[in-house]
Image (tube, rainbow, N blue to C red; front, side, top):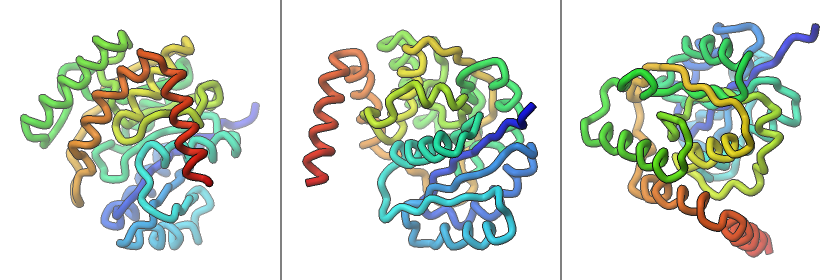
Length: 251
């Protein structure tokens, strides 16, 4: 029986203080795991650190992009890389240690009998450490808002610690993803759910980043509020608009 392959995709922008420590912590969790760093031309030379690690470790891979292009597009680039290279299990993970690498083993076990596994902050109460009360309330209200509007049975729809089977990502149209930022997580979950795939949430403990600055902004929150309506109301219309915009930008 052929051994399975797993890829942990990590988008980065100015994560030089974390990445050298994070990569070995990820790789030690299971021998089938490899990593792909998708770097948006970090001024702090994150990509250069990754290249040094790559010299001695064939399980570390790098996609370099010319400029800061957003979380969603970074994951889509990573998903396409994973599909092209026939990885069986494909993870999303933050670079800042807010997602504990030790939890990868739990996601990996759960994906054996599910199609998408979400590391959930809210499936067993509230498992968030070091967040200010205002941010926690915003996240909880956003999660409830998404559940009410979309009817998805997911307690933590904006979670970014996840594992997909490759077949799931092959089944959704990655080129027609409308959103970026944290709303990207909502949209991908929704498309997976609408396709009828089996989704499971497992509890994790989310810890606010050790160093560096959070990428959360008002723009990201606003996009997350709007995307649920785009998904429910006339999604084909919004997809056509996006294709026209991309085509115009390519001219």
